[in-house]
Each structure stands twice: as structure tokens, then as C-alpha cells.
Length: 175
Image 1 (cartoon, rainbow, N blue to C red):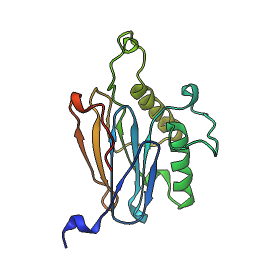
Image 2: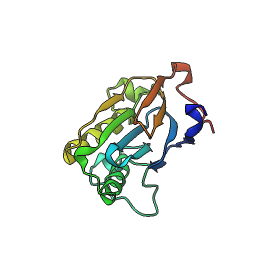
Image 3: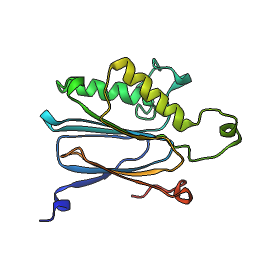
Image 4: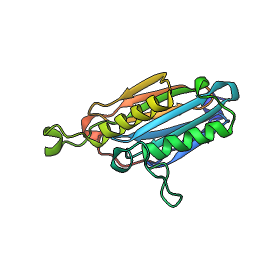
């Protein structure tokens, strides 16, 4: 049996999450979106979200309603992740946290006038919430102008990342 054969492979679409205590490889493609990975090695518990927007009015206290896609917004995604972590008896201090994405893949007149891109707004919101919750990041690769392809191995916590060329920044998600 090859090493790759033991992993269930899952594609994570924008606005989705994956929680696991089994060996899986979760892959996704990011532009301005942000992927947040949390892993608790003691319980072999992993979580990853692919979040699209910072939240309402860039406020940390964004109201997350049940009928809304809670993984669409950074604020709701992190609240949900932290609630799930707590339900599993995991302490924040034992989490290995990694953050990726938030690129400025689309050039507009607003960007040239120093307006914050969606990617930068996502990054700023993640940082605000991490500071408020006193969460420490083990690995981070955010910003820039290139999209990213990411492979996350839940069993080990390893993340393999490749930057996409500028031409490939506007991409169709693969199944």
C-alpha cells in the first residue's frame, strides 16, 4: 500500500470546513480567501476552513445567523472553529494554527488608491481575532498577489503549498 492510498482526499470549496480525526488530505485553492488550519496533536483532531470575507463592516462582533453560511466569513468561521475545539475538550494553548491566503489577485483602481483589498481585509480580521483570543500562529503565508494551492494532511499537520502564476490567479475550482 502506498502512503497516498491511506488518505481520503477532500476538496474544500470556498465557505466550507472539514473536521477530522482520521488521516485525510484536504486540498483547496485560495485567492483573496483565507484558509485557517487548527490541529490538536494530543487528540489527533484537525480542522480547516476556507473563508471568503472578513465579516460585516469588518467588526469582530459580526452576528452569525444560523441561515447564513457560517464559514463564508472570517468572524463566523473562527467562532465556529473555537466552539468546536472547546466541545472536544481542546485548550487553545495546545493548538497548532496555520493561516494561508489573502492575496490581492485582482487589480482595480481602488487598490491603486490604497484601499484595502478583500484579501488584506481578511488577513486583518484574522489577526484581530487571534489577538483578542490570544491565539498563537505556528505558520503563516498570507498576502502578495498570487493565489495558492494548498494540501493539508490531517494526520501529521503538514501543509504543502504552491503559489499560482499571475495568469492562473483567476481559476476554476477543480473537483
